[in-house]
Image (cartoon, rainbow, N blue to C red):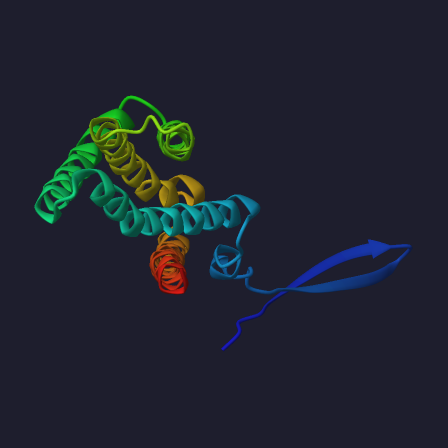
Length: 197
């Protein structure tokens, strides 16, 4: 039910009494404003999808690359477990850094670190100087940066929409959807490419 309040203003102009009426309608709900997606939020979604797409694609291809050097499944399994542990440590380090740096700055720095490290792999492969210790070192650094980036990215929703509970819930649900879509798409595409080649 909509409530209207009637206001009557009376004034005498030239001996005539004039009545003005106006009605106050309820202010538009803030929930409608909260559902709008700003360009910054769209950029956050696109970056999340692209990052998770690349991460899952790498998690499929990097063990295969290590297998070319290690020649042992047990060694590849150990290295994979090592990188998973370093990833977890990266989230702890990322939390410590978020208390001292802005989450946005940490996210940009960690993502740039990952891009730089992983860009070295095809370059080193092309010039045929990539060795197992060097590859493991790059993967460990990438895992550390990935953990820090994950921590920084998880704090971004509150930075983007503030403490508006409704907007925060909607952003988190959409963020999680985009995150999972990137994960599935990255693994699926690499799987198709491996089957095709």
